[in-house]
Image 1 (tube, rainbow over the protein chains, first blue to last red):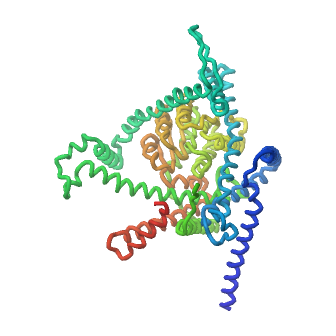
Image 2 (cartoon, one colour):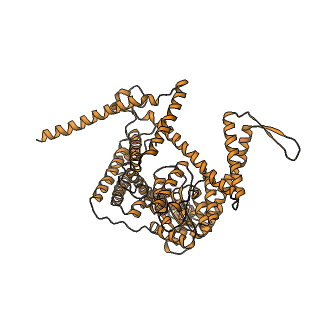
Length: 319
Length: 263
């Protein structure tokens, strides 16, 4: 009886493995033309075909009942998850994939990963138009209704159009000439599209970004002031730890304990040694513990979404 | 370009933890009663929405600075819970988005939440806004919204970077009640300093279980805790065997090598 049981178990495993390998072989052969680059007329044909296919798919999806739509989403989520799991967890090179022995990656999913990533970029590109439309609608309404601060919305449209136009020009016609009219009547001058884009990016966008980033320093001071008010034993503990860490990083703090020896047991009481110990041992242990929790939590959440086990909010009803 | 693949230990560890979580979920579905401890930050969501309604001021929810990933999806799940509460109390929920895909999902979720509460007409599509894909442009946009709309409550659930303090301090300036939750360990101190409630670490991933009390999700939490215990055990074994002179020193070296194949 026992021998028979083992024979069945081994048979299932070997049979299952062979079936899985055959399925993989069939799938990769079926899909391989999709992941092969095309050029010339075939490329334009592929683009046109993709657009038509995509439009048809979207139309069909919109016509489906809500319950069917959710099922489609569940199947798509499972398939996409399965693809990435197989790609990552199957070894890069293995004798299991003997039919791909001549390639660098024998894992049949690895060559597809960039194309699948590109597909995601294309899909998210469609939503970009939706987002730009929403933004334009909000600001357009502000201008039309002359709401308070509507001139900010005018500034948005000017900035949006200028960056879009010169961003495209610098990519496709960088030498295009732009005449800048001097309204003071001095003289007009001509610059290239690339120069205008560089000016907009380097001399306007980058400094504006840096300005906002620098505001952070002031906010840190006010937040620290609030955080360091001693309202409980924990807050007092945090303040002492922060005080040691701050002093341990600056020359003044190091000077305070410079008279202590550099070696021996007393050297541990030097401000920089206490700061390093607090950051490297106490704080690091806490951070790693939080990191473990986050890691396991993200695995659980991923599993729930992948296997359609998530409930609540947009996964409210079990299908 | 070289691609990363899991080695045997990675695959085994993820497989074991995944199996434990799935087993716990299936056990919980069998009707086993499970306890979940109180998480003050999540309990305060109802209070924050109620307070905003009493003050007659809107709510603001940010899902962080990244596109669609696990953290954003968890943030969006909480956003829909908040949207349902807002709809129930006839309040507005403003959701500024940094990513076009997140914007599209958020709009649909909030619309569905208002419809589910029987108030589809109360949904304002202008309140779900795509601001910018750039970090500080987005931060400036959210700060502007917080100040102009004088929001009464702000919710920051998702993955944040340096903009976390800019957003949370803007909320402080207008006196908003603030609740934040992020798996970004570098941003947790900023939220702790500037927000009324902060959800730390894996509490963030417990949010949907806590809010819905669904057995499936509660079971998943039990699985997570067992998984954490397993990792802690590995850390203890690793620490002991890593001690110099121990006969098992080779085990910790092997573990370290397997977990850091590129290191």
